[in-house]
Image (cartoon, rainbow, N blue to C red; front, side, top):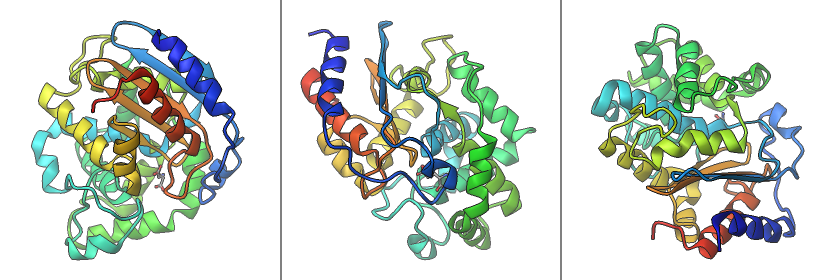
Length: 304
Ligand code: GLU
């Protein structure tokens, strides 16, 4: 069966499932999103592109942006970034403070909020106009100037971001943050607010299927070895405290966000994005997980 037909068949099946879970209510702007939207889009390295449902609707990609920020920092500074952030799964919630005390402020990985805050600090120290430069970087991956931040969402999160404020100050007390916490957090909330459609997401992430090179413009975003490592991090740490389950059921490196988006890549083959805002108890999109599990099972296109 063709990949487009498998996508359609899987979509038809999963749209009929009961839609369980809640939207992320701790960010007021996210709580107001229609919880029953559901879109998927696949982009393949051999040029196929197929979307179904609400795949052209923008949503803030939240933690999915952490893959892009670590890519940018890794590209600029290489292995030095691992001096400040680790590469181990945490086994704790994405916004947990618990391990930081024992680990002297060094976050276990760049996908935890703590780790992404440290990466934000690194980017601020190395960019002249952090927000503009980061957005330009993201846009340049697929030559897409339609990608933008949502000021409303960034502001909404900023007003209630008590835990992230605590994380940032706590890490700073160990000397692992160089800039002012208010600047680091302003950048962090802004990068999480980036809005994309499923189509834009799957296209943007194709570089991780293609050894770090954008298939759109041949730009090298990461070396082959760096791309392998970012995929390894997505595989082991990309789904909060459910990364093992995602590897077990779906079998692809990927990253999710509390807005209900998931992007996953199959090295040398394709990138796929799913969006459905209702989250399971671990904070991953309920239908997104179900969809990807069924898709990789039917298509037999997982890495295991
Ligand atoms: N901006 C969100 C936060 O810091 C990102 C969380 C996520 O998507 O995992 O809480």
